[in-house]
Each structure stands twice: as structure tokens, then as C-alpha cells.
Length: 364
Image (cartoon, rainbow, N blue to C red; front, side, top):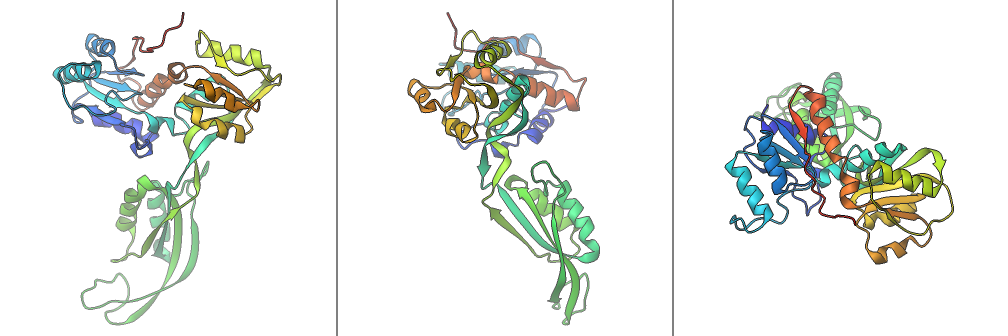
């Protein structure tokens, strides 16, 4: 198994195209064609993690947070990032990160938090917009089934919990071939009419070229007609945070204490209790304070995230209970996601979860 193959497994779940513009996810250090002996999974990469990889003979480290975030101009060992990169290169250790692309999928960081808490009916808290396209093409009626299937297999036609979605309308296409053409049907210099099916499918923007290639390979015409139209729809399968419901309502203190236990929190920073039951829960792994209003709009009883600043707690305005459980604590189960992705496809492959403590925050 080579590095590239492991990366592709992760990117099937969390495509790199879904990372935020400021992010630096992907293969950061190493040769994509290098053979992988063993994988070490972590949240952050530190010198301790690099040493652990060497000790355990892991030559690929998969991390949630990118080791290289703002770029490196020198490699002189003046800080921990430079030292980690230098040691990794010297010892042929590849480094890969899946960060905000893993935050932005329903089965990602926030989805795993929701699973641990036991939420049902989980939805994206702040769906992404302007990430969808509509493909329209016109296909000879007898070939429409084969073209449609190829488009579905290339990643088109998924809407929410449904796949193989399309709209089809019958009509008549006309064309005339000149002396340079090689027409599939019709004669040279003669107007031809052909029964055709208008096929419409929705697709993510990052699947555009896969879908276009599928269309061109299966469409029988020499010059297929097609249009890609940008959509302004919200994409409810992609975005920040999630919101869901508990099977049974819980008292606020009971629920907060359960959260402390699940996430192994020494302490939780929270706003004043509102003396009401908890049923609807919004959450976001990592730094999620900017999505507080989305949680309020979703009519959540509590919003769980990390990195709230002092004045941001006032923004709850007694409309919602805020629970800041810490950045690392909220993302700790990301290691489980990586482990499940890799071992699901390769159950016997050597995948190890790091034992190193990388949370820089300590509690007294």
C-alpha cells in the first residue's frame, strides 16, 4: 500500500476541495508513491509524535491539524515545526492532514461528537452554499440509460439521503453534419432529427471533471451538447457543525455531567443554566463560537464547542446554554474517524493510534 492510496481513502470521505481557503490539508511531507509500512494517527504533530512514529516504525503520520499551516521559509530547526519537518524528511516519514475538509462533512468531526453523545436526526448546522452545479445534456433516447448510469457512478445525482437523482424529458434534437464531421446518425449536409432525452443531474463542483469525462466517454455523439450551471442552493450534506436530538430529554446538569464524562473534561465553561430540559443539541468541533447564532436559529437548547472568548458568552442572551468543552477535547475522537476509514477498507493493515498527549492546555 502506497501513501497515495491511504490519502485517497480519507479523501473519499473528506475531499480536499471542501477545506476552507485558509487551510493546508493534504499530503504535506513525503513521497506519495512511497510504500507504507504502518500508519500513526494523531490530532497534532509534535516532536514527541515524530519520536513515537520512529519507535513504532510508522512511516506515515495522519494528523487532524496540519503541521505546516502558514508556510516555511527556512528549515534551520529554530522551532518545533521546522524540527518535525526535518526529522520526518530525514527518516522518510510522510505527513498527511485532514483538517477543515473533515470538519465540513456530516460524518466528520462534529458528526463523531454527535454519535458519542447519542444524537438522532443529525443535520449540518451551517450548510455550505454555491458548491453545487447542475449538468444538462441531450442524449439519443436509446442511449440515455447508459449515459445516466455513468454520470451517477462519477458522482452526480445525489441529493441529501437520495442518490441516482435525475430529471428526464423527451424531445427532438436537430443537427446537420458538414464534410469534416463523423456523425453518429444522419447523413452529410442533410438536416437530421433525432429523438433525444434531456438529462439533468446535480453534482458537487469538485466532481465536475469526473462527471464531464464520464459524459464524454459514454455519449455517442461526436459533439455532445451540455451545460454546467452554478447553483446557489445550500448543500445540506456539507458545512460547519451539526444539530440533532436526544432520544430522551435530560436535565441541564445531568447532561453537562454526561458531557464531562464522554469527553473526559476536567471542567466545562458554560453560561448560566436556563432551568429547562435539554432535547435539541447543536455542536461544532474545534473553534465554533462563530456559529452560535446558527445554533440559536436551529432552536437548539445547548451549543457545545470550544474556544469561546469572554464576551462571546454574553451573546447567548439566555436564549441558549453554551458549553465550552475545549478545542482538543471536542476533536479528540477524530483519531477514531481516521482509524475507521482506513481499517474499513484494509482491516489487516497496520494502523496505530498515537499515545502522545498533544493537548497544550493543562488544568490545575
